[in-house]
Image (tube, rainbow, N blue to C red):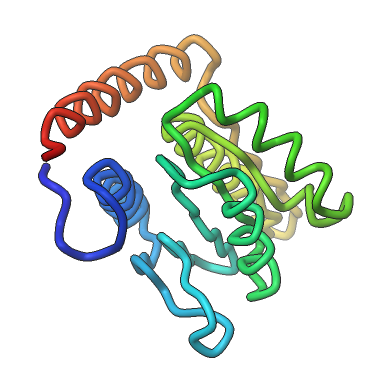
Amino acid sequence: FVPSSEGRGGPQHKYLQELVKRWASGKGYKTTIEKQILDGLGSVDVALEKEGISIACEITVTTTVEHEIGNIQKCLAAGFGYVALITPDRKVIAKARDAVNAALGSEECKRVRVLTPEDFFAFVESLEADAAGRVETVRGYKVKVAYQSMAEGEQKARKQAISEVIYGALKKLKGFRK
């Protein structure tokens, strides 16, 4: 699909915003691109909300890690349960994780993830599997229901397929630069 005019940033940034939005909408999340937070003082690239789970998605393609740390702090201050810094550049991940650990307290760090797009999808699915576990009463007996995420081999195959699609699309978008 072609990035919509909704959102900010270049074609890759908009593509990833739209990808996250469409994928999460398919999972039943209420999604908002460039959601205003903190009384209009800032915005989140993509906000996801569903049954007590709130995830702020900040997408970085060209911005500096220092700028993204400010965005993460803004999202935490706005009360999101989790903040995901999503980048297609694997080189940025280690640098960003180190910066997050240096800039935030241990409790805040537990709520922040620095991920590739495909790792983000796996992270959300694991959150959903954890949230889906519940205790029910069946014929007078308490029954604990727990859901597991996919088997590791299945997850790897799916992650590989998603990676190929995302990186193929991003490569095509790079050629669109004028």
